[in-house]
Image (cartoon, rainbow, N blue to C red; front, side):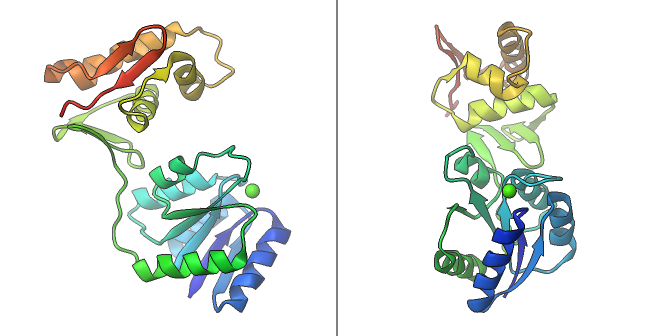
Length: 224
Ligand code: CA
């Protein structure tokens, strides 16, 4: 069983590799995200173990890019214990499982074996809210099969609303997650982009699924 481990903390990478080798795996290590992605694309691995914070390219992006290429090698993400990273997001980008650091090597070996047993069948990730469907890796959106062109900001905004479908998302959270905390243009930009989104995902279809929640923010509801 051949595993690619992408982890920039070299000491940890060596420890994990040695531990997995004791469990019968053969392990290749990359310490850089971009090199890891390249290795994952061109090598033939039974599974990939991905750290999230990496130089070159982060684990979410690596995972998303592999899945967008229809590379279905099972992926285990290593997440930080402090909850700084969103485990749901790891799964949304197409990871198959995650482990929080620090983890036991026995557990990692057992979960990797389980992933490898499941194999490499296609597992496309989509977010759905009724007839609205998003592929976060390919960055495509359709409503009832009709393709919808979105700008990068519109897409990012819709992605957060779809991940939280049926629940209101505060306007300031949308602002900081889509525009970044350094953005100083004011929260009005969210209203403007919600209007753009309505003109693309709702109005042409005679729908009103992107609702304003007074004094809170916005929520996307299913049309079904
Ligand atoms: Ca790291």
